[in-house]
Structure formats: C-alpha cells, structure tokens
Length: 119
Image (tube, rainbow, N blue to C red; front, side, top):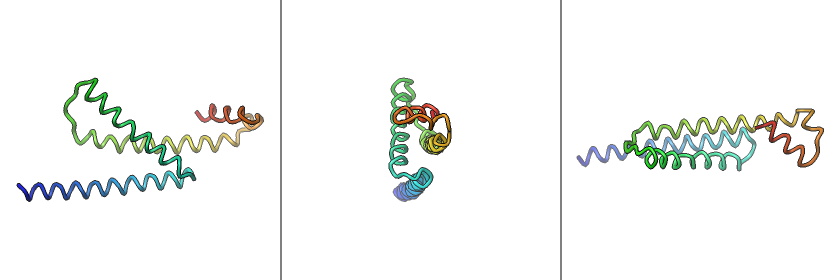
C-alpha cells in the first residue's frame, strides 16, 4: 500500500510540474503577444479567480458533491479561452488606432470611442 501511495504521489508531482510549465508558457506567450507584462498576469489572475466562484456555485448552490478529474481539466479549458480573449481584445485595441473615424476625436473622447469600438 505504501508503494502505491508513493507512486501516486510521484505521478501527481510530475503532473504539477507539467502544469507549472504550461502556465509559465501561457504567461510568456501572452507577454510576448501583448507586449506587456502586466496584462498577462492580471488576465491569468482574473481567469483563475473565476474557478473558486464556479466551485462555490457547483457545491454550494447546486449541491453537487462529486468532484471529478474533469472539473480540474476545466481549469485548462478556461485558461485557454481566457488567453485567447486577451489576444483578441488586445488586437482589437491595436486595430482601433487605424480607424479614421475614431482618431478624429481627441483626448478622453478618443479613448472612450476606442474602448467602445473594441468591446
């Protein structure tokens, strides 16, 4: 029994190492793609904050007691979708700079128009 437990622990540790590498790769690619260090960290943090809220709804509101591996795999799906959203919104913001009707405005009006166009 002790041998089985040590093998399982070793496998879990290897899996967490892969998760850490994947997370670091996502942050690096986001930082490279957005040309910012702040956007990836805040984006990933916000994405990860959605998981505890989902767990509270899952267990607290819906009263579902079963927690499977599929629930944990959902974190990767949400991270992937969230990282893609960060890329899409960043590219839309950059594109809004080339829209002539948006650039005719000045100051806060221009920023507000670009945010509205991006959203």
